[in-house]
Each structure stands twice: as structure tokens, then as C-alpha cells.
Amino acid sequence: MGRPDLNAMSLTELKQLQKDVTKAIDSYHERQKEEARAVLEAKARELGFSFAELAPGGSRRKSRTSSPARYRHPENPSLTWTGRGRRPNWVTSALAEGKKLEDLAI
Figure 1 (spheres, rainbow, N blue to C red):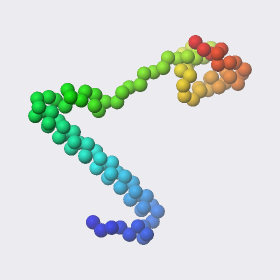
Figure 2: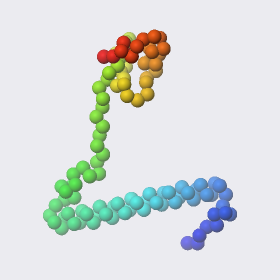
Figure 3: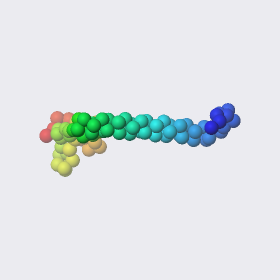
Figure 4: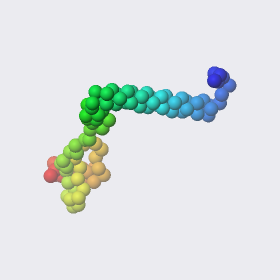
């Protein structure tokens, strides 16, 4: 495959080329991972184990534990907030009305 003349390409063509290269790189990394996984699985079988026995949860992501709610809407108890992240609109409204965050605490 010949090298494309980048100077002769339009911006749209360059952006498409960039997307194609990024996709090709990602695909390459995935193929490399699959090849490595196959080699490791074969070696584990050769030794009388399964790959899962030797590396339990290797591909699993750890799940986050949810934080308990610390604040509750005074009129609608189903609306709660943990105190983390962006403040819900009902908390912002309550604070604008002059209430304190402690007034909303559970």
C-alpha cells in the first residue's frame, strides 16, 4: 500500500483517515490480547488447569458499592441524595429557599 499524500487530502478526508487509523490500532490491540489469552489458556491446559482457575476474575471489573443516602427531600421521601456528585435540583432549590443542608439530612 502506497503512502497517501496528506498534503493533497481535504480536512474531511484527513479526519476519516484519522478515524480509520484509530480503529485499526484498537483492533490490533484486541487481536494481540486474544492471541496472548490463547497462549495462556493453552499453557494452563498443558499444566492441567483452566485459565479461569489460575486467574479468577481477570477480565471482570470490580463493581462499585453504592453509598447510602444522606439527604432526603422533605415532601417526597423517595427522592434522596448521597451527598456525592452534582447536587440534585431539589437540593439546590431547598438551599435557595434558605434551608440548610443539615435540614435535609436523614
